[in-house]
Each structure stands twice: as structure tokens, then as C-alpha cells.
Image 1 (cartoon, helix red, strand yellow):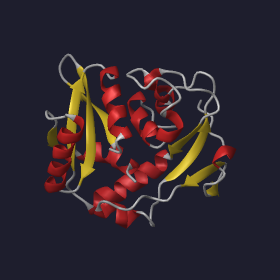
Image 2: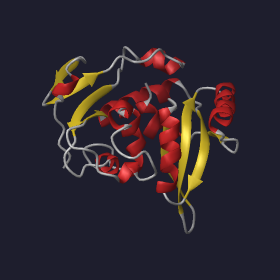
Image 3: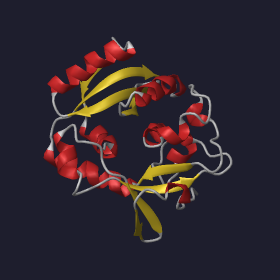
Image 4: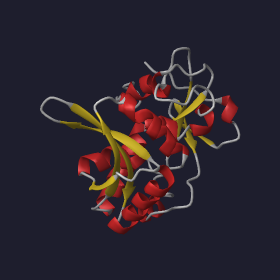
Length: 216
């Protein structure tokens, strides 16, 4: 079971006691989209802090039933802990599966908070667009690109698609409330990251509910 504890090294941030856990309230960045403006004050992102123990990996932490229940959600941990993790271990395809140094303070967005935000966003906005940047049958093949995207400030996530004989992993950048905005980001990804083969997809409601709640 993943142990979540208060990080004294983050004492400069504002903490709010919530039951036996301590939630880290991190001010949201300036809103880019309408749902951010509507949710910043009403449903802010709430974090707990896990102090890494020997052998902890992003994959194992994300897969914990106390966290997100899936190794594929390791990007959601990295995204909110870039400064803490980026220079600590080799930045390659094995980073999600490599033990982190003990003593790191890893912020974990509350799973219940993610679900609450996602439900409110989904009620207010009916159409969401996302950009598929890579599809592979091995999740490791997506790791380096996912890291590069997040280091550039993009929110990305990995979802699954099952065919008759293969489980595909899809790396996507999202979510966007209009096709016009999505096309602008698609063009930007081509120019900045060389992702000229990325394509636009209308996100399913299941995908939105699973991942949109993490957005700042």
C-alpha cells in the first residue's frame, strides 16, 4: 500500500488539513480555457504528498489502488512533479519504471478531486478534442515522447485501445474545447516537436471523464 505523508520540504506552500491526509492547494496557472475559469475557485486541484521510499517508481505509484490504479497514469504524476523528478534519474524511456531516489516529495492529485472536477467539466462542455501523437503496442515506446511533451508544458495522457489480438497504447495531448484551438495546437506540435503525423480526434466521454480532471 502506498504511504502518503506530509512533506516538510514544501513548507513554503499552503497546506489545508483534510481528515488524516494533508491537501496541498497549489494556485492554478492563468486559465487558458473556459472550464478552468469556472472551476478554479469552485473546485481547485487538491494534492497529497508522498515521500518516496526505496524502490518507488512512477509506474508503481500510479498503479497503486490508493492512487490511480493504473501504471499508464504515470504521466499524471510526472506532470505535477517535473521540477522534483526531471534531473534525478536518466531522462529516457525507462524513467517511469526506474526507482526514484528516496526522500523526494511527490505531489499526487486526489483521485476523488480528479473525478469531481471531471464531472463538472463534462456537464458544462459537451465536446472535447484531443491530438493523437503516437500509438504503440508497448507503453515504454511512448515514454520518451511523453516526457518531452510534458517538459515543453503540454498535458498528455496514455489511453488504451483494444483490437482483436493487440492492446494498443495511445499517447495524446488534450483536452481542447473547440476544433479551431485543437488545430492550432496540432500545428504547433508539428513546428516545435516535429510531430507532423499527429492527428485530431474527438474525445470519447469515457476518456474525458478519466483524464480531464487533472488539468489545471
